[in-house]
Structures are given as C-alpha cells and as structure tokens.
Amino acid sequence: MVKKVYVIIHSLWGHVKSLADEVVAGLKSEGVDVTLYRVAETLPAEVLEKMYAKTFDEIPVITAEQLPEADGLIFGFGTRYGAAPAQVKALLDSTGGLWAKGALVGKYGAVFTSTATQHGGQETTILTFLTHFAHHGINYVPIGFAAPQVSVLDEVSGGSPWGAGVVTGSQGQRQASANELAIARFQGVHFAKTLNKVQ
Image (tube, rainbow, N blue to C red; front, side):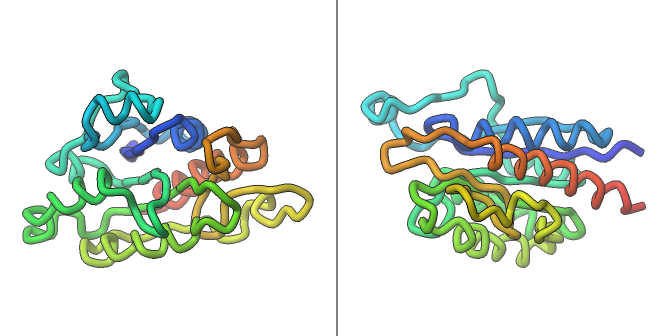
C-alpha cells in the first residue's frame, strides 16, 4: 500500500517553502503519496502586506480533521523565540478532539524550520514542538547524522540531526543554500524510507 504524507508549512517569505519543495521531492522519489498544505494565516492582510509576506494562496489550507488521513505528517515553519509560531500552534491547539480519540496514535512525524541566524534556535524549535508528537502518540523521525551535509564546517548552514533548516538573515535576505536544500531532500527520502518499512 502506498503511504500518504502531508507536508504542512507556514512560510512568510518563502524560505520554508523552498525547503518544503525539497522534502516533497525526496518523499516522491521513494514512491510516497505527498500533499503540500499550509496552515491558516492568523495575521490580518494589512499586516502581511506591510511585512512583504508571501501568502502562497495556491497551497491549500489544512484542517485538523484532515490529519488522521495521512500516515505521516511533516511540519515546516520558522521559529518564534525557539518555538512554533502562533499560526502553527493554532492548528495543533485545535486537535483536542483528535487527541481524545487517539486519532493520531501511531502516525509518523518530522519537522524542519528556519531561523534568522545560525544560532537562532533551530534545534530548540524542533525540540519544543515534539511535545505535540508525544501527547498524540506520533513517532518522531529525526535525520540524525546520516546526511553528511549536516556536518559541514566550511560554510554557514542550517539543518541538524533534528531536521532540515535554513538560515535566512535578519531581513530574510539569505536564501537556502545548496547544502540546506540537500539536507531537506535527504529528510524527505529518509522519512519515506522509514515509513515504507512499516507494514
């Protein structure tokens, strides 16, 4: 049976979206059925306009009720003080009914993120998000050091054993590097291979 994975993102300026595209490509290369979703935006349109944010209207918005349809859930979002942004939290905070029914128990999950600086909290952001996985009984799939790109020392790079990441710069001026995109692609492949081992 073909496994189904939902990649769920919040991306204000496109950095997380660029990682998501690579994660999706990695998943598809291993024969997984993938759908890219975004969480509902909670900021007013006039605020987003002043922030020069991208809205990604072409990506469908996911609801909590859809989450049990997938075998795997991969979340991507930028950090907010070492944790998930309110937009992502709003989705997870609406899953109380799913939690009560154990609807996500046994699913597989992973996370990727972005920060303004190399030490802006990529690992902390993923770590603090894992409480949602624990309470829902979702099996977390890290990438470990299996991707050699995680260990580079000759350039600034996001990504860690916890998941892919991109360093954006304080004004969002830095785009994902080839190394960061390679880690994201690896994460998709690795997640798919892990999921495909499950009967």
